[in-house]
Length: 321
Image (cartoon, rainbow, N blue to C red):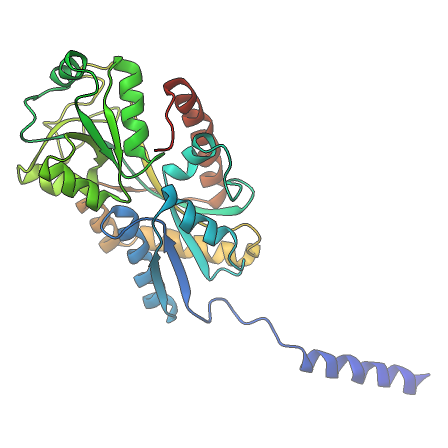
């Protein structure tokens, strides 16, 4: 009997030695997918995080820009990626709008992803090309009503904060403008500067340089109060559309089945990154406020955003173009 127990013990020991132990996370390249073109804050966030992962963990972290399909292409690629913590996704406003905007998505926004962190938030600026003869929100409303459908507005794609900011604006002001979607902020701003579209809402980081240089005219900001960095720019609400408010946000998610210990390590590291003075300064330089917190907090934020913008999509008739 003793001999049998000894043989069993040896067999278990050999099996444990032979089985590969799970490597400590992370031990290989981390891929951060950004479903937008380079140039916007989504891309900036991905590159900040990638560099800090590399610096702090000593592993390579790379950004992969996968724009197109209203962010669906890059987003779906992460939903179907191995759930091991080595593929992450930068998400923003459209992530919560797309479930209402599209009749069918190739993924489930709430079931196929694990929220990691709400990284930052910023308002949008309502800007016009300098050749557009309006200098206030009230003048823009009057111009749009005088010639319905003449003015065109750019966005970074159907379901983006730019798109829904204008759809909410149109809904609340009973105006008509033509939607021209782009694959990212950089090409949209280029066409706005060139006069190919006349007006747009865009994230503060994407247009603040052009506004301060006098290349674009800012009419209003979508936050509930004026921004400290742009104290002379009124809110949309105080400029003529009472009750108007839009908040833009940025976050990071992982595939849903990612192990809890890996999610916890990523969340802790991301909170550490957001608290770094140089990162805070980079955010501030682009008008973005770092947020941070738990994955659970971000998950609740997502559910609230999905509900809010679902109502706006339905009432405004916003659609994919």
